[in-house]
Image 1 (cartoon, rainbow, N blue to C red):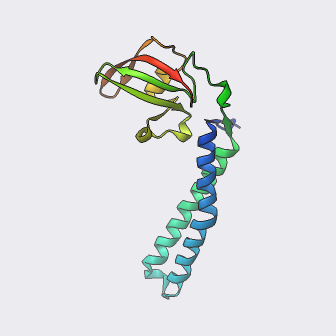
Image 2 (cartoon, rainbow, N blue to C red):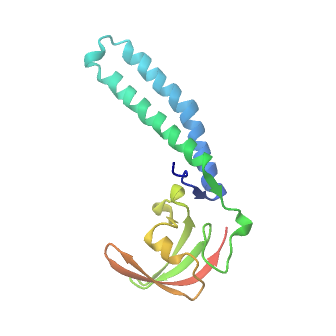
Image 3 (cartoon, rainbow, N blue to C red):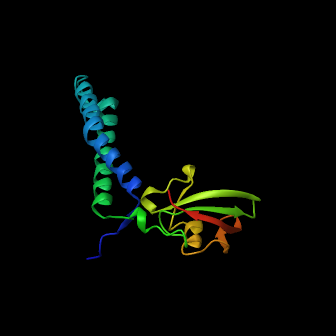
Length: 160
């Protein structure tokens, strides 16, 4: 049997998943139970779209609960004090010069479970994240991306 995948996360990422899990187990489950009760009151289940929708929502929610529990059970939390400012690692905040766009960007390198590109949190497994890992200030990295190749210079590495 294969070994369970480890989810490398920051403390903030674990806390976010725990909060979502708590919400789903308490608030969301109650909401869905209420929807099912109301839908059952409409009678005939064979043509009851409210019931079908509530049962689908229940299945999705229960699946997400199982997924979150698995991720938390297999989480490997990065100790904030272990995050180096010498080289890029998970938990690092990296300021880079993007030569393609001629601008500076800042990325937080996180495990795949907490990646959120809209908040500039990129996974260590993503093309850019993988290329930046274990690099130092002053290093220039080239990354193959779907649109071609991007070039970055690491300007600063810090931690929160």
